[in-house]
Length: 499
Image 1 (cartoon, rainbow, N blue to C red):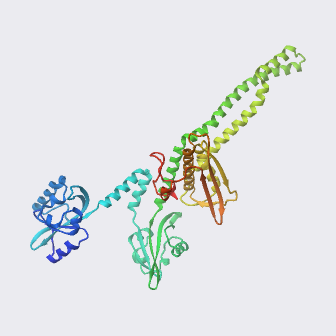
Image 2: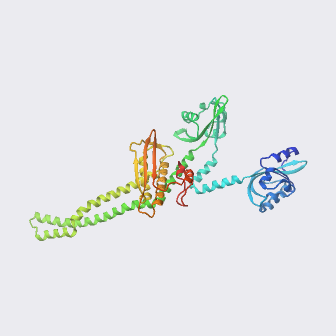
Image 3: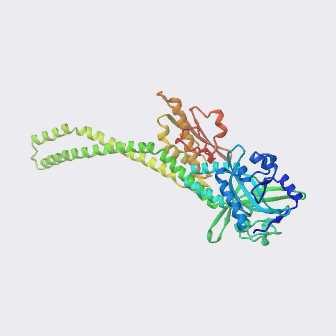
């Protein structure tokens, strides 16, 4: 039999009355002998109503009661129980006859020579609801997001405390794993003396300007690198300011973020595919028609050229006849060579324009869909904006005029190009949809205006439209992930969340 913990009555009384969780005492017969105030709150029964009742009939759902009774009988017979000393999650039974999730921990105790079962119970309904909400959000996300959530769940945060003198006074095991420095080597030493392979000037700067999680690069051997997300919080002490470092390895997170951003870009292109196909098909069609025209015209010109060669030969041999001249003139009139000679250059020019148009669309799609990097790179924002406008042209060209005022002197700007393209695309498509709602059943078009401008050491990008605008009631939610006012299947609500 398991060893029992001996408690005197006064200690038991204190536990029953002051435990933060529900605390229930049950005797060997399965009868309730102790019931604290938290038990009353969780299960809805007052202590005087349940003392002396069978525990299984009070807190165990009917479907599990026989198993509970069997567990008691097994313990009495063998002294063994699968739940004793363990923390388990099961279903509880409320007085109003509904089930709810609870966390249960049971140990045997001895009081006044009798063996009792002491159970601590916690209502985990709220936690389960949160877990359910997260699971539902996770199910809506793409497979890469699911993988990322799994990685996040497996990664623990490191914790480092540096006192006002800059010496390490706390160094957790996760810090050991992250930086490869044992606690015994870190405690008591100046943080800047530790062989952490990051940019110390950058870290010192973050300590002087705390706020939010910052990405710090960790150098590794053979040119490798990792990225650490660090939050540095100043703590005021009597003799100065200490700092708390909390963070985790976000290398995989950055990689997955890139994959998710890429998949969202490809999803956007997929949603625009029909329009893009139409934009490509139109010039391809008239290029094809022109090629047929040129082929037929070439056949006619070959026939005429044959006759003129005969005429040239006859002239050279001084055997040119009137009938040969009349035959050439008849062919010229019948085949309308003057028309062909005027239209062939036009067809060639149109075909060249069509091929150029297709080339522009394909190049824009390639630039838009490029995976990019999780590191910021110097980007020509005007070019990126024009590529995105081209990709989205089928969404706006039938409902709006596109006006651009792009500052030609705009400097290259460090940014995450993929995310930038995605946000611009989302705004333009949303603008087109908003305008479509306004101009439907009319012959008029709206206007989308995109402008860029240097403002001091920053760049300002403005996108305006003549649509219906965002209702005042939802403007505070536009940056919330998965928020959208569109019907199901028309958008994920992830666009502005990237900002």
